[in-house]
Length: 147
Image (cartoon, rainbow, N blue to C red; front, side):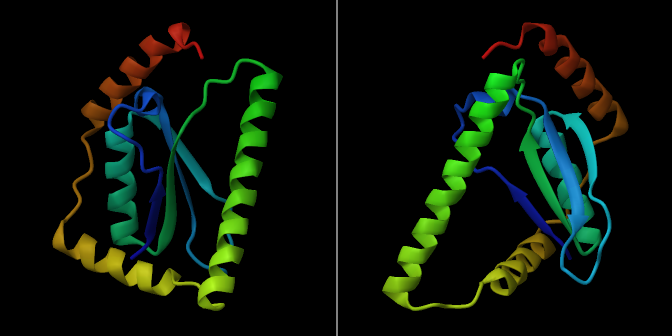
């Protein structure tokens, strides 16, 4: 049983319409292999494929949108935003540790909860035809992507 990581987005988020990729990698430090990146997909098929893979194998799947950056400045802005978010998260974790004590990572508890949840719902991958239709819809959007 593996782990799936993705963004929790509101239903009206414009990011939901972007192409999505899946990055598969080792779940723990014991395995060492280069991550495999697949996509682009529409979000629902990406999540379904990732769910199937992590249900069958002990690996990590990260499902995330492709950002249509068309300039180095846009990429710099995204990197700066990601770095700021990481710093904010680290500060929040430090504050939490000071308030509640320094507890070990709850990864094992989250993994066990994910196992129980996935056992209740067998995942079905989308068909190849559905994925190819999604590719066509994504390709049709690419010339008009603007930020």
